[in-house]
Length: 127
Image (cartoon, rainbow, N blue to C red; front, side):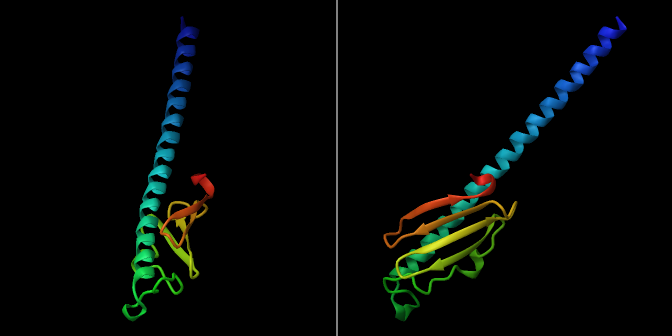
């Protein structure tokens, strides 16, 4: 009877350790997905700023039909979700976001002259 009880205790400990490992993995995956979703929202807000800049006349501080000269607003260059940088040309703005949780997790997207976000690229855990 002693060996059987010892075997059941060992089996129970293995099952508990396995359940904890699965729980931690699921929690980590959920945190990564939540961060990715929050970055999507931030990128959409930056894209809205860029489109507003493009349609605003130069006399009002805009691009008058061009993205040239667009810069991400200072309040949006770094959030609790990610750090953002952009490269603008006359017809596109490329936005790159680097996650605050892990800087190897990045999202790069291009905003075209029609206001469409395209060419999404993901690195790190975001893939």
